[in-house]
Image (tube, rainbow, N blue to C red):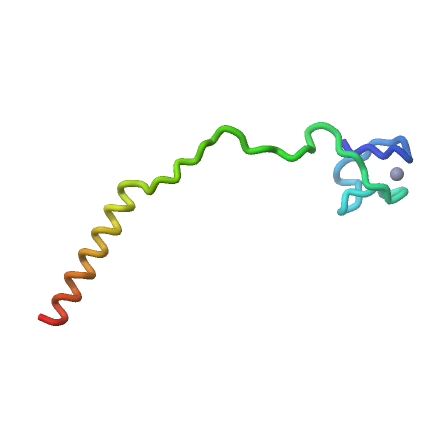
Length: 73
Ligand SMILES: [Zn+2]
């Protein structure tokens, strides 16, 4: 919950200004727990290309290559 020290008052996230300041005094409010930046943890992304994608690329290249050869045949 956003907390304003000057007003000694909690505000709901919806009642504060869009820039996160106090609607009463304009002080930038301290955000309580739960409003902190969420860190992306774990989820080690496997960036290797999926085998079926490689297969598709090979298939497309082979097909286009074949069509190209036919153009000159
Ligand atoms: Zn205030």
